Image (cartoon, rainbow, N blue to C red; front, side, top):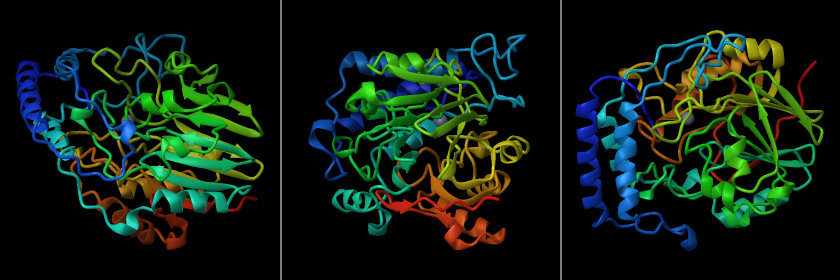
Length: 398
Ligand SMILES: [Zn+2]
């Protein structure tokens, strides 16, 4: 969800309320278009109170203010109220009510999905099991992956339900079901989360996972209560450049250029980050959500690279005409791959939900082209199918 504390408050709020009313009228005529989504996860009709809450929430996005004054004595990305990007970047101007309106429409009119974009759940599970005992990566959709490394199974940025929002009527809505559904997930040893946005940290997914006491959770600063309140006990909160080792895997929270928040009053109260996941048998960079920085990724490459694999965000970039973006373009994603000194890159944050205005199938085409333009071979830039499992690239370091 996009929130900005800028001008045009009254206009934006009125427009958003009008959009809400329009959406409610659409809801009454709405047909479900996504097949085979587990029936027990189909959303119930929203209560009136919930609808009012969302209207207030959307209006509230324009009303809140977020001073970003450095908390003296702390690292430069800490503010008196939470966190900020560092190097400091200007707050983007509002994306505009029309942008929200298009996102709402997106949740009602889903794109046609090519058959070769995903595997059936049966095939996904079968391919996953064929590589049991080996280091592998499985794309479940958007930024959610299963990474098996050093005998551990890591779940990244968990979002396996239908809507990346507090209430189903407001999307963004998944247009491809997860490669492996919540019910059929293998036992999870570790969860790694990049930031507190609905499409990267889904409450229902977190609540539904089994054997929470056995799962070790790694989050950026401020997100421990989210997991503690949902029954998890092994939670490590890390600041940028802090490390923690567990099960032969070293996790390092690294900088990213983004923001956080789920509602009107929590903008940037929790930190956002990228992750380094390192073990004897392989090293992975997970970009999370980030915009490009001319310094941050070079530093990561220099101090933490090289990587066998970079998982990089390539979608949700076409908000740029409204101001600085919070995501990478495919061309910037390739720069991140090179600057982090990553041998192979896998594309994420595309092909699952519509978060911005680019055509949904454009990001991987541009990603492949940008890689080619930079003399990176096609087999070093992976565009996986949702549900697909591949062996992690073998270690290629000095
Ligand atoms: Zn985000």
